[in-house]
Structures are given as C-alpha cells and as structure tokens.
Amino acid sequence: MQFSNKFRTVIEFDFGKHKTTKDIQNNIKTLVHQHGNQTFAGNALKHVNKHVFPAGNASGRPDAEKVLLLITDGQPHDPEVALEEAVKLKKKGVHLITIGAGTEKWISKLKLFLNRLGSKPTHNHQEEFKYLQRITHKLVNDICGSKERQPATPHKCFQEKKDILIMMDGSKSIGKRKFKKVRSFLQDFLSRVDVGSSRIHVGVIEFSDSHTTSIEVSLNQYTTVEDLVAAVAKIMYQGGKEADLLDALRTADSTVLTGSHGDRITAPDTIIIFTDGNYNDEGIPEVLKKLRKRKVRIVSVGVGGQGKNFKQVKVDALAIGTGDVYDLTNLESSEFIDDIAPSTCKMTSCTSAAPKCSPENQDILFLMDGSVNIGSAFFRLGQRFVKRLIDKMTIGKNTTHVGVMQYGSAGRVSHVSRLTTNNLRSQISNQISRMVYMDERRDSDLAYALSIASDTLLNPREKGRDVVSKTIVLITDGDINDFAEVNSMAKTVRNRGIRIIALSNGMNSDYKTYVSSLGLIASGPKEYYRVDNSQFNEVLAELEKTVCISEPQ
Image (cartoon, rainbow, N blue to C red):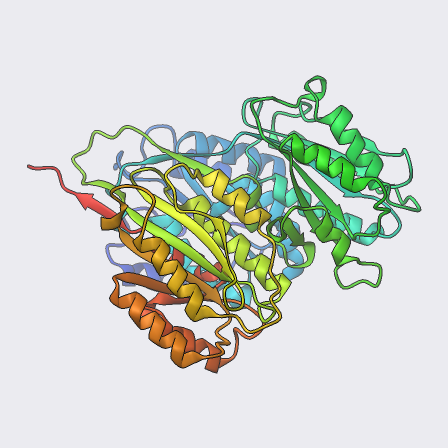
C-alpha cells in the first residue's frame, strides 16, 4: 500500500497476488511515486482497518499472524485519527511495526509519535534514509522471529511494578535549551513505560531556587502513558539562580514518597535525578543516606557533559555505584528503559505438540576489567551492558546461576555478586549498579583473575552444580601486559571445560592489536564481541542456549 494526500491511499498489490519473493520484489521496483505533498497516515490506517484487516478474516488464513509495517518520514496531518485506528488494529491482534525514516531532525520529532503508534516501543525503529539497511536484520527478527523459537512456548512479558520519581534541574546552570532536551528525552522514555494503576507509577519534581521545588506530577496522578507524557510536555522551565537539590530530596522523602501521594509499600522506589552537578552539596549526603535506608534506588543523569559548569564528580556522588550514573548526551531511551523498568516474562499455557524448550542449566561468571585503561565512561557502559544481559536471561535455581567479579592488579579481585541459588535477577542487577570502579592505576593481572574465576566456577557452593556447563564472560580492552602468561592461563581454563567469551570495551578497544589478542583468549572466533548495542542480541543468544525435548509421538 502507498499513501500520501487524504484521498490517495492505494493498495498496490493484495495478499496472494504474488507466489514468489522475486515477483514481490519486481512489483515493488515498478511502483510509481505519488509525489503527494501531505502525509495522511490516519486515513491510510483507516483504509487498512476497513479493507485489509476487516473484522473477521480477509486473507482466508485465520491462523496466520497479521503484521502491518508502517514506513513514514513525517508527522502525519491526522495524528489523532492515526492513533485511534492503530488502537483498533492492535485490538484485532495486528502486530504494528513502525519505521521512522528521514533526516536526523525529522526522526527526533517522530520518535514519540511512533512509540505510541506501534504495538510496543521495541517494535519501533528510526534511521536516516542512507542507513536504513542497518535495521534490516532487526526488522526480519521483529516480523518473522527465528525458526528456533517459533515452536517454543509463548511468553507473557510485562515491566516490573515500581514507583519512579523524576527530578528535573530547572536552574540557570542547566539553561533553557538543555532543559528542553531533558523534557524531550523524558517524553520518549516515558512513552515506553508500562504506566497503570497496578503497574508503574511515575512522579515528576522540578527544582531550582531555595524552596521553589515544584511537584509537577504526583505518583498516583496519571494511570495512562498518554496523559503522563502530555503532562510532562507542559512542564515549564523555572530558570532559578541556583539548584537547591537538598530541598528537592527532602520533598521527595517527606512528601512525594508517602502513601498520601501514591507511594506504594509493595512497589520498590526509584529516584532519577537530571543535573549538571552544579548544586550545593551541604546536607545532601545525610538525606541520600536516609533514602537508601528506605531502599530507594537513586539514579543520576548528567546533563551538559561538555559544558564548563558540568561537575562529573558531583553527578557521580548522587548514586551508590557507577552503574547508576548516566550521561544524557549518549543515552538512548530504549537502553535506559531496560535498566530502570526491565521486563519480566512468564510462561503461558500451550497445548500444541511443539518441543518443550527451556534454558540450558549453566553457571556464568562475568569478569570485568577495573583498570585505568578502561576509563570510567566505558566501565559504566560495561556495567549497563551486563545488567541488560542479566535482565533478559532466565535465572533460577534449576537454570542459570550468575556471578560478577571485578579485577585489577595482582591479588586484587572483588566478588561483586557470588554464584548462588539465592541470587535473584533484581539482586544481581542492584549489586552491579552499586559496584565501584577500581580505576586501578597499575597493570591489571588478567592471568590471576582468570585462575580465580575458573576456581570459583569449578568449586561451586551449591550441590549438583559441578556437572553444569561453565562460562566466563571477560570484559576488557585487550591491552594485556603479559600476554604469554595470560594466553597460557586461558588455555588451561579452556582445557578445564570452561568456555571463554570475550567482550571488547574501553578506550583501547578500537586498536586491532588489542582486539586480536582477545580473539586468541576466547574459546573460538565466534566467541568475541564488542560491548555495543548492535551486538547485544548476539551475545544474549550465546548466553541463553536452549535445550528442546520433543514430545513422543
């Protein structure tokens, strides 16, 4: 189908017209551009609702999944109609995937709308025209999935219940332009949150001058994401002379995070602070300590990292560990949502005769380089990458056990999270967030760290774990001081039956010499990756091996 002006929606070819992929491709090549001067996506979706996926079944295949792939480059002239028709399609079970294609400027404006339009935020893609080929693989997986998971038992996924309080710095130090950037990011981020009366509650505070802290949104004020995002879009910049963060934190502790303002005892609390670190820190450590005693997680997001007023040390001081410190400049809302509100999946009943699939029973130990060569920004990147992996993995008593270690110079290895049955996914994630970067100035001793890691894996505390498969996930830049010794130890570890997966991360990770050394340490050529979101699914697939047992006929 092609659409543009209001009455120019045309079905170029219908279901079943072409029998081969080549015929479809040839037909697409011969499509004539309408050259319309307007974008009526709502009218096009109405046409789809009426003629392509009407009530009942249009294609004659009731068991076939219905997918609509919408490709557009501009804000539609009928957005309300588009949203209304999209809701109707999704209620019919149509899987709506959106692609925002165009210039970077247009894509940034489209993000929020497409997130609301698609079936869920992870099924919305944005890319410049010249780079569209980059998302081809993601789209194929999104539309078709993989053959291996087709017969698997379906999952029901949802974001974990929690109360989230957002604090926005509205002082002159931030400035109006950067404040708008924060607000725009929040609109995109919150459009991905599963807001609801029994799900996630979100509150918003703006702070600047002394005693001007404003509760813009209470935790129990909105129960739909549309109303919440609309409210955030209306928050005005205060422009105060200073940032009184102490007053804001006290307001959060005494007012916002209370039952009368919607805080729930059964939901964990998270505070997200957007600041440039230009605040008076007198009295703040005491309030932070009080909030942490209440088990409130505090996340800080640095705003304006390149500016002369930016103070990274004070941004870092708000969070317990570097894993809860972010930089708005390079922050993607899709990555942020995985950390703040990770999804949990539960198995639903299935009556088909498909094979029974379950994650492989295994022990995985993440070994993270804490040397100065990594750099604090890259170390935080590694923390978040590991947390995202863990949030997507199946962790439990009879499935995967996960441990995390950080290593530095000789004799310096820190057990961040130990391999144990009692470790829940949320506990491991919190332990990683609280991990403090060693920033080890001396050469890191990888050979020693590998020996400790292998001994930990081969001498489990839990009974019966000696027979499960073992994996070390090494995260380093590849700048290895004594390669001969490390290579020898890596070979010993592999000969002991432990698989080594190497992830390249750090300031030196682009140098070919360092990269090639990691390839030699890893168990094989396919066991080397980069700490990069584009390779996230590949790494996850390596760690989430499944075992399928067919039912007897």
